[in-house]
Image (cartoon, rainbow, N blue to C red; front, side, top):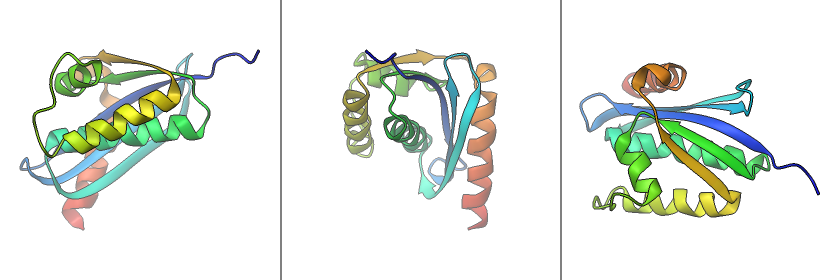
Length: 139
């Protein structure tokens, strides 16, 4: 039997103006925290929470494409973490389809853990999200 393939994903998102020019970032690492991918994307107009979900979805899609069977997601968004854990309901109509897409990706991976981390433990993903917000503002 093959060993499980696991990754750690730090994700972040933000918006200037909320809603406003937005961006997300994701850093993918091996279990021993060697960086294997850095992703980011600009959103012309979105809320912080929408941007957070876009970062999560991008990270999960990358993990699916790379055969992950176990992923630890770290985010400084308590809302995202608690919604993905099922502790908070998803009330926002704008977040419901994003949450559903993320849940589907989680089922494709198999085992995904969500960890809320302080902002200072998410600086790499935050930096990528800010670069993407710059691109969204310039676009």
